[in-house]
Length: 379
Image 1 (cartoon, rainbow, N blue to C red):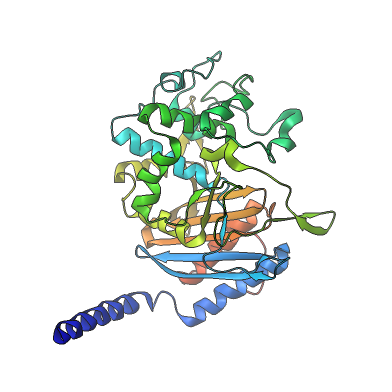
Image 2: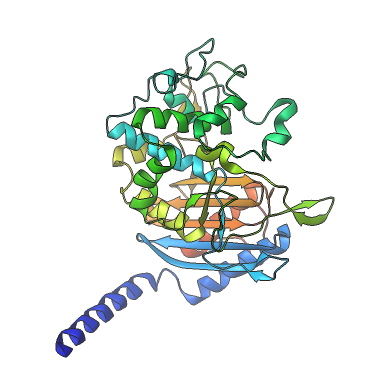
């Protein structure tokens, strides 16, 4: 028995050594020092109390760390596993689930939404499931006299379909497919469509198709009534003063980003996505291909569920998350098996700054020419 234990210990040591050898040239101490300088500069530039970041490479989470404070009032430090709202990063998860359901033969992307969600009223033009994924449905975003209030809805919705009442009766802002119009409410309808197509409750569906395959054990719906370990407090700057964020219940927009997660779990999500554990290679390529409008023109920076970026001649996927309590970003380069996730507990950090920071971290990791790491300014 002792001999067997010794052999097992030796095997584990060899595996650990091999993994370390594989990641050591990628994540050296000088690179970590440069990355941490970038993140500290971001905290200084934005005034955010805290943030958490994680890096994935070769299908593994190779680094995660918290900076600053997760809770100022209690002087609780931010850690690698501090939990923040996903905000709109969750849209990419809902889009990925839609393609997986299509692969299972349960969802027709070209069908009108009423095939799966009969309660949604017909509009002057048909809206397809693909329109919802592509932000070409014509369904409004936060617009009109209720725009500001819709970012801070306090009512709790127990079912995804209940939130359709917020926008279902409103006119479309354009003919579906004629232009690109970002919309949170379009993704709420998409969540309801997925329920109708799968005959599964949306949260259970996402656990089956996304969270469990990716190993995202720290991701769940952001229910403010539940005690969630390591949850960060959220903040906002108003008139130059840092304050607690206004109260907001994210259940009204769960499929559009009402989850709570950690930076390592977001990296696990991107790792699983890049390694083909969530959707087929064909769908991965399609999701990172520029969206086409009815007239044949393309949307330069959006594919089918992901924003897309030309990163030093390589195709990259990204999504920003900004809502009450949080500003976040995910960024991945499939060609280099690289995934980066960052989450700040301060809302309203511009999306360009978040993406620029993720790209600069990638520059350090991939030995690309990078600006002075002591400064944090968008490209």
